[in-house]
Every structure is written in C-alpha cells, then in structure tokens.
Image (cartoon, rainbow, N blue to C red; front, side, top):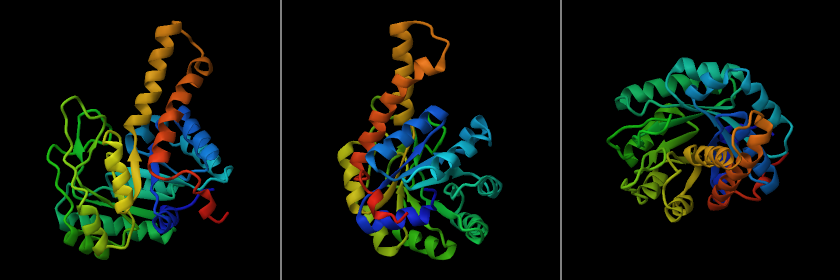
Length: 289
C-alpha cells in the first residue's frame, strides 16, 4: 500500500513508534525489506539516495512501486538527501511519494528558500517533503556523507524553519553520524534536544545516522518523539557480510540466486532487529486500507 510520508508519520506520531527508512540499494535489499515488513506487519519507508538511484537506474523504481502496490503493508518511497530542486522534481516524476531536500549545509535563509521551493512543487502534486536543520556527522564510509563538525539543531530555529517552509517532517541533528562508526569513534548525542524541539514544532521529527548508535539511545529517542529513523549502513553491512561468508565457505559461485538467499536472511535479521527496537512491529493495524 503506497502512501505519503505525511500519512505514514501521522500514524507513527499518534501511536508513539518510529518507522525505519531503509536504504535498499539493490533488488535483494528490497526483497529483504518487503519480506520482513509483511511477516512482521511493520510499516516501512523505502529510501533511495540520488547516488543509489543513479546506480540502480530509473527503471528500478517501477519494481519498488509494484511491490508497494501489491502489498497490504503501508510503504513510502522516499528520496533520501536530495541535494537540489532538480533531483527532487526528478524523483516526483518517477513516482516517489516523499522527497527530502537537504539544504542543511547552506546558510539558514538559503536553506529556507530552497526548501520552500521544493515544498511548493511537491505539495502541488500530493508529495510529502522532509527538510533538515543542523548537520549530521560523517564517518567517511557512507554515501550519505555529512560534515566533520556537527551543528546541533537549534530549537528556536527549528520552529521558524518549519513555519516558513511548510515541511511535513524535519530531520534534526542531535549528534549522530552517517555510516558504521569506526573503532574509537564516540558519538556525542544530546537527546535532551528532542523534547525541546518537539515543544516548538508539531511536524514529525526524523533521526538520520541511526545505524551505529547504542540501542538504548535509539529506543530513548523514539520515546522522546522521533518518528522516522534512517538505517542504511547496518543492513548493507549484514548483506555483504553474508556474501563474504558464502564465498569463503563455499568458493566461487556464478549464480546470484544461489548466493543471495542466505545473504537476504542475514539482512532480514538486522531489519527485524530495527523494527523491534523502533516499536514498529505489528503497527499495520493502525492504517486503514
């Protein structure tokens, strides 16, 4: 059941759970996500980064739309970290039901102006928009990139940003970083910012860079009001670990349908860990359809 992000997160906010946004950078990851979502009755967001879309080609979107339209599980097709107006418009034309415009590294006024422009175009055709305020860190091993210096989201600026842009959800910076955290990397989360931001804005809040933080912190962020959490690196790591394990134990194999089933199972285990952690399982019942 293909829906918009606004519809998805409205329900998540009402029932106090977070929906995982999985970056499924291949058909096998899409399969893993859909199988887990249907078995666990867990709403999902299929996120595709512009770099992933270039690799997958526009035709891949038709497969995602088919899966969504032939499932009873609510699903959003979301452009992750759109860097320009043109990228967002392209995604909308392909059938995405949600786009993110990431102007977080621009000066505040420029971020507002760019986000306003995307919101105006997207809302005209019923597509949801996620904006970002503050910056997400980087570990150097993720397509989502980030910055070396994290700028935490200012609650007062968040209120102004949401009011002036009309975004449907807001990605906030509380100290997370994209990618798998390398040895010795310690994130400095300020979870207390979440309720402060929550007091000033009514739109759902989004947490990026959720792969490597301790489960306890992620679970707490959901309790404090986060309703969407982006997971990319963890599921890809599980899948590729499966590929490596298969080849080391079995040797060369040319047939993808022989190699990938065990890799999909490993990926699903990680997906379902996140669904449980975010309190996302068995939430399909809250959606009409």
